[in-house]
Image (cartoon, rainbow, N blue to C red; front, side, top):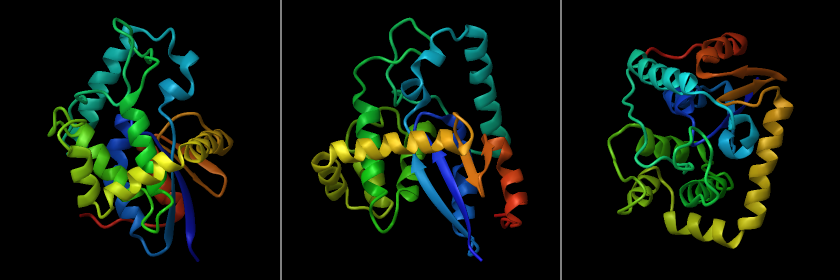
Length: 217
C-alpha cells in the first residue's frame, strides 16, 4: 500500500534546504509517494508575523542554521542575493518588489504541472541558492543551467508560467491554504494521514510514523 506525504516547502527556508537530501531519498522509496506543494515564503505569506522580530532571534537563527548544516554535513552559506528582498535596515520586512522569488515560484509552479513534478527542480534551485557555491546565482544563466541539469526544458517552463501566471499564482495560494489546513504555518511541513510534522528535526518522526527506513547513503 502506497503511503502519501504532502510536503510543503519554501525557497526562502534554510531548513527546507537542509531536509532535501533525506526527502529525495524518501521520494525514491517504493512504498511512499511525495506530493510536493511549493508555498510562498513566510515573510510574504504572513508578513505581519515578522514585523516585530528581534535581533536576538536573528542571531540565533544564523547560528543554528550554520550549526545544523555542519551537523548534517551539507554545504551552506547565506544566499547571495537572498531569494526574498528586504527593506534596508530591517530584519525580516520584505520589500514590495520581489523579482527573484516571483521568477523562482513561477518555475516551480510550472514544473509541478509536468510529469516529472517539481521536487527535482526544487532541490536543484535550493542547492544553487543555499550551498554558497554560486554567489550571484540569479545572474549569468545559473538558474537555467541547474534547471536543465535537473532534466527540465527551461524555455518550456518559462513559457508555461508566463502564459499562465494568474492560474499558477492561484495554485500557489491554494498550497498556502492547504498548508494551514494541514496543521501548521511553518516550513518544512509534512502531512501524513492528517498528522503534521513541522521542521527538518521532525523528519525522523515522519519516517517512524510511515514505518519506513532510509538507506544509510
